Length: 214
Image (cartoon, rainbow, N blue to C red; front, side, top):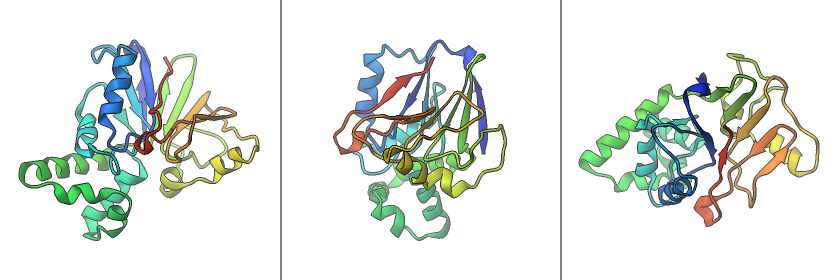
């Protein structure tokens, strides 16, 4: 469920919002910040696939040494579909790109999706004097702790906390300096206490958010 990354081995560390197949926009964002794959790291809030034009290309990022990712609800839907053979929910939510794959391309994507079973729900960035936490939709507790048991479904799907933030309520989570989430497409990043919501709807024609945190 948890993965810890010591960021001292990297020069710069970035957090990126939901890609949803927007590989071209991601590449443009990396070029803009002069990203160096030998020195820099990107951590994704999940939802690499579905809806956009290049889900296989974004899924292939999981094989890059400079890229880390938490599981998103779209990856979870894909895995559930492959497990139980019921593709309806995934396809309704943009997974129909999968049926267009054949032969070696289909096998390659199936293998990459299978590897996601071992991906974390939560990534902790150990930055020495700071601790940052990345999850897809929420960290469903009032206080963060390494390896603390939390329920999988709200980590992947919950919008309760961000809804309260959007209503103007004060929200924070203890135990870390900052939390970064995606899942809910917004017109602009939303900061609420030490919570940062960074899915700015790139797949819907808005800007992809890439934030430098180190």
